[in-house]
Length: 277
Ligand SMILES: Nc1ncnc2c1ncn2[C@@H]1O[C@H](COP(=O)(O)OP(=O)(O)OP(=O)(O)O)[C@@H](O)[C@H]1O
Image (cartoon, rainbow, N blue to C red):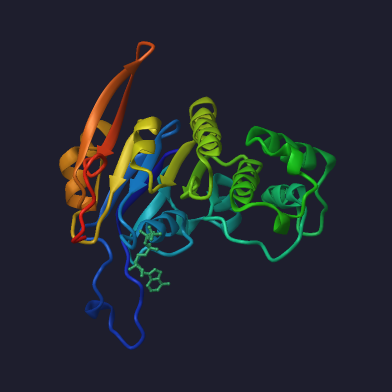
């Protein structure tokens, strides 16, 4: 499935202001195409509009200008159920107020396939368990979701999305509550699913180096810069990180066991601290 964003732009409506008096959040309209098997990493400073952009891309907010299309069909011409069968969204994890078990939470991800008055089947629960196993927390299946850590809840939310078998996976800062070992599990799981099942995937991340790991496309956004999209090698430049994040970095290439890796290292690492900061 091909996801296209065509001339997308957005502003938060302000009470009492005419549309023409409100300025757009993005300095230029957003345009890109995402194909099966591709990952788009969205990078930008706090408040640049990344979460808003994700919501517009999925139809949770309606673009003020432009459109999202799935295989050429505007989201606005599709029913909600049709959209949520195709797009799986993993929001940022926040504490749960209902004490469902983790397995029940994940099984709820099957809702798009279950009739309004029907119960989940044994197969639905088996699929939910398989997805919990995939993200490494099957042992927490019976634990209430009010009694797990933020990182474990994040993994459960990812499992809940995967169980719906989406064609497009959208994740909002999936690594933010995770320790580096769990980050590795999540990054590898996402990449494996995308490449093996041919999903298209959009990830909002604060970890610039994760864009190198995913290796496909990057969208960069900042309040004082144009929105740019392209291949990792073209967008992840030292100059762009300086322009968009106001931080000097060094882009490094290193080889381990014959494989070439790239990373960005901030230049302030290794400097003495600045007492005037
Ligand atoms: N519901 C809202 N109404 C009005 N303004 C909003 C609303 N939600 C967000 N904003 C504003 O829109 C801008 C973009 O917010 P958004 O959450 O999309 O940024 P972000 O890049 O995801 O930030 P972060 O990295 O900190 O999560 C911010 O200036 C924010 O204050």
